Amino acid sequence: MPTQILSLNHISAGVAGKNILRNVTIRVAPGEVHAVMGPNGSGKSTLASVTMGSPVYALSADRSGISIGKAELTGLPAEERARRGLFLAFQSPAAVPGVSVMQLLRAAYQELHSTGMTDGTGNGVQNPVLSRRWKAADTSLVEFSEAVRDQARALDIDEALLNRGINDGFSGGERKKMEILQALVLKPKFAIFDEIDTGLDVDALRIVAAGIRTLRRRGTGCIIITHYLRILRYIRPDRVHVIVGGRLIRSGGWQLARQIEKRGYADLTDR
Image (cartoon, rainbow, N blue to C red):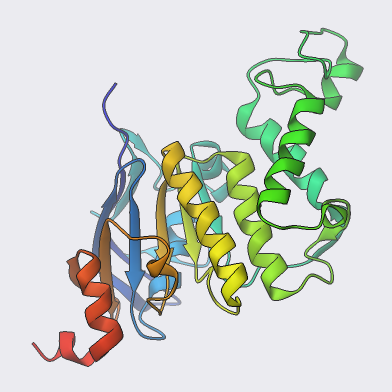
């Protein structure tokens, strides 16, 4: 089977007639980690939102396109892109009181991995009442719930938080860990982490980085949007891309991130 590459092709996009991104092309293979760096207001978060299908932004060039392998995603709403394997961890995850973390994960997992009906023990069922309870054929409800708890423990997440409203009263670090938990549970083909390192202390940063390394080992391609080198010390990226003023001005290896840490972005834009 051919490798399914995430292709962001010649992305030009804006909002309310204002151009933000200009002809940005990035391609990520399964299991690769790419870092996207740049100063504030350069368009990094816009790139994440456009990739995930935010209706706020409009592609402004005919040749702009987003695809996974041969599957074209351009024009699809965010939920359809998620079904095809995209995941976005938000820079500022919102609170959703009244819907627990476990409820969200159960509903999302079934949407993404439903290939049949099961009664919760792995046996196929035809009863419509039972089928509404659980419909992911690759695991039982009991196995799924235990897997979520195992992942939470690995991320040092208090199990009690799984039964609370999504991010309701959570600290900044807890919210970022919950984004990693969702990615680990939902198993996307490609995951975008928009400033996942912002506001994390050293211990939380290491835990979040370990979660992304686990995704990488599983074959999930990852894009990490960041201002800083510090998270990249724990996750050595395969490629580093620098966006300034909405343009991709440089791509390179790990050394490019180290150069930015030492000299800033002016050294790149002056050339």
